[in-house]
Each structure stands twice: as C-alpha cells, then as structure tokens.
Image (cartoon, rainbow, N blue to C red; front, side, top):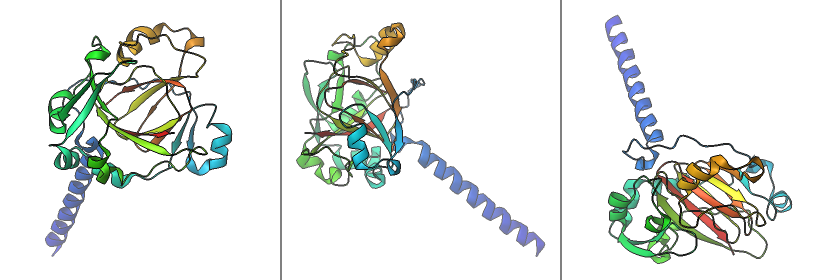
Length: 270
C-alpha cells in the first residue's frame, strides 16, 4: 500500500514537472519567431521615457501631459492576448503563407517596393541585419498591408483607446528580423505595440533633427554614430516589450531597432 502511494505521488510530481516544462517552452518561444541564428542584440540601452500603468493615467491626463509634448510608454492600456496568439508563426503561415506581402526598402526618403509570398519572406528574407548593409538593400515588411486579405487578423486587434480629438486610427502591421529597423523619419502621431520580440526606439523633438545618413540603417547608426554623441545630443529612448505601447507625438523624429525577430503593429492617428 505504501509503495502504491509513493508511486502515485511520483507520477503526480512527474506530470506536474512536464507541465511546467511545456509552459516554459510556450512562454519562451516567442510565438515561434525566435531566430535559429546565434545573432542577438543584448543591449537594450537606457530608458529615459516615462513608463506608466494605464490605470494611473486617465485619458484626460494623457492629453494634458503627453499627447502634444512628449512620448510615453503605457502598460495595460489594451489586452491583445488573442491577437498575439493569432500572430504566432504557425498561425500566420497557415492563414497567409501563400498570400503576397509588399516589402519596402528601409531607408528614409525613397522606397522601393517588392511583392513576395509571405512564406518566402519568412523562409528567405526574415534574417538578421548586417551592420554594413544599406537601407536601400534591406527589404522590410511593415505597412502596405492588404486590409481586405488581413482584415480577419486586424479585426481582433484592440486599438489604444486614448486617441487625440478629431482623429481616427489606421493600422500598419509588420514582422522583421533582429538588427533591422527603420532609420530616422517623422510623420503624424501614433502608437506602436510589440506583439513578439523587443524593439528599441530613439526619438527627438521636431526642432532637434538628428544627425544621420538617410541610406544607412539604424544598426549602423547605433554602432557608429550613437556612441560618439555628446550628452546634449542624446535621444530620448527606450526598449519596448510585448504588451507595452509607445506613444509618439506629431512630427517627432524617430528610428527603431528590432533586438529580436519582432512582430509589431502601429496605430497612426490621422
């Protein structure tokens, strides 16, 4: 009897251990988007942007303190758990693998467009960025989404509820490899949310145009220019993770650097 009781306890412990191991794999696999390459960018850099829980900031306070003056990172503003599951690698390939996506070159002022099947982009082009690659030679999947084909996915995305008066949101969805990103540019205000991976942001106010080459990548800027900046020319910056939303005001200069294979979506307020 004692032997059977010990055996039962051992089996229960073994099942619990296996469940924990499975849960850890599910948590750590990044939705299947983790790169098989040894290439990793570990430096998340400093964070000098306010990070707030949405519960501590009302919509009115957001408008008064941040909407027109400075960026802010908000946690808990939306719950996109279901959208995140739909953005796993296996789910997206099953649904959209044979459909075409439009890629753009990752430079500041001129863009070359290339249409490829989504499966081909994931299998062949979604790879780590080389530091000496030019933006004009780097194909980047962000925006240019076919909203008819991707509507079934976007319908599950919960947009940030804190919007500016007399604006509506337009979504741009993207997936990019580690070391990729877009160089400095500016446009209207909006949000950026990371679904999988980590994305490092660099921002300057409209009156402080940063020093950068429009055809050099953000990785090149971080490697060659950023370490030499005097303190007074340092950007506002932070690395955002899944579940965090970064808001950027109108006409703020910004550049991004994906530290992992990243899935992300922006909401542009126009």
